Structures are given as structure tokens and as C-alpha cells.
Length: 285
Ligand SMILES: Nc1ncnc2c1ncn2[C@@H]1O[C@H](COP(=O)(O)OP(=O)(O)OP(=O)(O)O)[C@@H](O)[C@H]1O
Ligand SMILES: O=P(O)(O)OC[C@H]1O[C@H](OP(=O)(O)OP(=O)(O)O)[C@H](O)[C@@H]1O
Ligand SMILES: [Mg+2]
Image 1: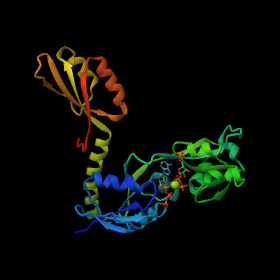
Image 2: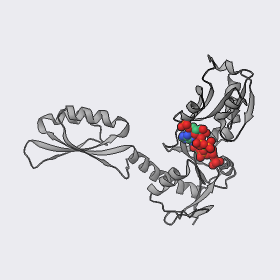
Image 3: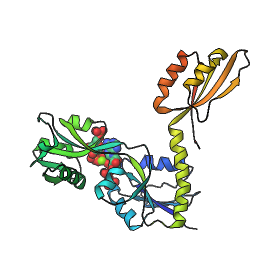
Image 4: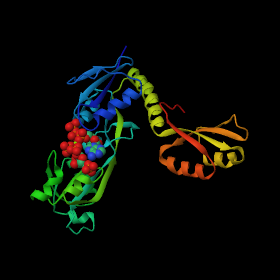
């Protein structure tokens, strides 16, 4: 029986969270250190541990069938690779930044300037689309230091919290793109392996949905039930069960993490008591 081959970053920011997604999908992988390849014990899947920057090429050549990779790397390598899931981690942006002291009004201010970056293709195509010509200096790490040592006038690099920019006295002036970890698919995937991919996607979706929601139980006086149910979304509608104490009910529902605290505040104001919040392990819609 064939196995689907997935590329995962060998070490670095994506490694741990990528393996966690597979683990939460119930897939167990021997994760011996220094392995380049590992086989899952209970799912037709092989993991290839690779450098992030090499993964797009492996996908294009069909050496691996799928990969967990930062969207920004696919953009930089300019390969036309389909993204089938956004995985909601490693969120960042690729941005242009300049020294705080520089007066900046528009992207035209970059005309003729020296820009240090590890993402030359991304910067180039962005600035070309704006009709701006620059002098690019390609460096592989510690890009933010370049303006301070006189190597460049500005930089283009990954920004997340902004603290690296702050520490280097730089300010973010243009966001070129937003990125997060994604599941990408080789254009050469076979039909048989595509069927395995669909099974994997089903599991990934139920894991992502679960991570995004909480299970909530609360007690409510019966005369407040209508108002409380109005506040609650729920998968279909909330479950309402009578409590042993007359005139009270227990309400069970699922709440999205994004609106969680607002909903809890509203519930309390509407008369809910004894609110319990539990994590959800898997969620199948
Ligand atoms: N500060 C950050 N916050 C959030 N996500 C980030 C951050 N820096 C990088 N990323 C994302 O994580 C990915 C991997 O980053 P990392 O620095 O581990 O790898 P790399 O050094 O680019 O690659 P390689 O595997 O070739 O060494 C990036 O491509 C980007 O999508
Ligand atoms: O906005 P922040 O939260 O400060 O994150 C941005 C920094 O994170 C990344 O570097 P990383 O730590 O991966 O180091 P690297 O340059 O060695 O890859 C990126 O290259 C930035 O320097
Ligand atoms: Mg990095």
C-alpha cells in the first residue's frame, strides 16, 4: 500500500507545531533525533525532515506529496503550489522597514535605496509593481542589523511581534504579505495518495476546529433561558437539561475562541451561573 510523503521543517520555528498537528490527528511518528525520514505507525504516511527553503522544490518535483510550510516561502520561491489548509500558527508578515529617524511618506521613498533581505524575489516583484527600483543585498540572517552597520538603507524581513525591529531602531513601513503555516500539495500527487490526503485533511480540519472552540456548561434560571440561548451560537443549538433543583437548567454549548470572553461577559450579565469551560479534542461538523 502506498504512503503519502509529507515534508516538515527539520529544525526551526515550524518543526514543533507541525509535528503537533500530526500528533493531534492521532498519527504517531518515531521522532528520533537526526532522522531524515520517519514512518508513521498507524497511518500511511512518511515524514521527510527538510530545510524550509528547499521544500518548494521538492513539492514541484514530486519528491514529496505534501508539506507544512510558511506561505511566505512559497511566495518567495515563486512556485505554483496549491495550498489546501491554513494551519493557524507561525503567523507573520513580510515587511519593509527603515530606520526610525528616516522621514517616510510612501514606497517611492525607496527609489535608488539599498535594501537588505533574505526574500529578494518577494521584495523585487512588490517594488517592481510599484515602479520603484532598488539595490538589493541578499543576506541570510540578522537582516535587521544591516542599516545599523551601514550595509543598507532599509530592510525587508519577517515581522511578528515587531520586537526585533524595535531593538534595532527600525520601523515597519510597508506590509508586503501576510503569512502563516499552510498545508501545500505537489502538483504531481498520485490519485492514490490524494485519497490519503483527503483522509488527513478531514482529521486536520477537526483538530483545527477543536483548537478554535471551547465547550461551555452553565446553570441558568428557567426564566432567563430565552435570553441566554439568544446569546449562544452552538453547533446547531445549545443543549438544555433540567437541574435537580426546580426552576433551573443546565445549558451546554460550543463557543468560538475569538469571541469567547465577550460571550462569557454577556452570559453572566444575563444571569448565567457556575460557568465551566472545557477544551475540545476533536470537532467534526
Ligand atoms: N518571528 C516569527 N514569528 C512567526 N513566524 C515566523 C517568524 N519567523 C519566521 N516565521 C515563519 O516560520 C518559518 C520558518 O522560520 P525559521 O526561521 O525557522 O526558518 P528559516 O531559517 O527561514 O528556514 P530553514 O529551515 O531553511 O533554516 C518562516 O518561513 C516563516 O513562515
Ligand atoms: O517581530 P519579531 O517577533 O521580533 O520576529 C521577527 C524575527 O523573527 C525571525 O527571526 P528568527 O528568530 O527566526 O531568527 P533567524 O534570523 O535566525 O531565522 C525574523 O527573521 C525576524 O528577525
Ligand atoms: Mg528565522
